[in-house]
Length: 311
Image (cartoon, rainbow, N blue to C red; front, side):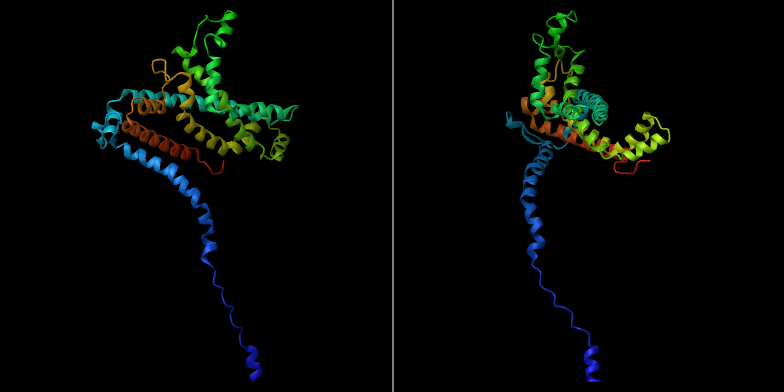
């Protein structure tokens, strides 16, 4: 009986080893430097902008500095017609630029996705403008639009237009000229993202559609576009935000002129802060621009059903 009781006795549970808290905290310790840098270089400036938007702050007129409350915002919406003009132009600029860049980028992606001789070289040429910095892009197009040595000079040589014509100084041509300059660099962005997504489309879908007698247009509409939906939504949103905040190209090409015809809201903010030194009012304009972008982004993502299944 004693031997049976000894055999039936359950084994003692294994003793738990005490785990050190250091391995669990190690991932957080490793990302702490990057998190602190982000906090310092992103969070602090954002909070500073919100703070100064409620103040009158002009280093050249320190006697006027002080708490302004919502006075800057009241002035923006009730006593600043330039704000509405620049906001309207910004919306027009974003709509035209993003729409054309998406259209041409999609076309280029579909072309370079095909198999043809020299495809690698063709892709490199298509994507190369995206590797050029914005400042260098602006410098290139300033030279191309130069009235003495640029495109208009060669057009005048063949009888198109007059010598000394400057597209960037004419209110009727400054907008399309700036649009073309930005298209040159913006189209490859869409082409790269869309081509990357095209690579993941299964060829079996197209082969099955061909067996069913679907035309190329129907294959594009029912297979390619639904597959590219999320890539298109994300790329258009990112590009819209970047185009809205575009300052370097327009500042270098036109400086906001002629007669303020090409002044976007961010360019107006830059002029208000850098040239007029009115940092309080510029911060309020920046806050309004931030709210507009945030609201439009949320609405766009909701309407596009980003991340949902395509029907």
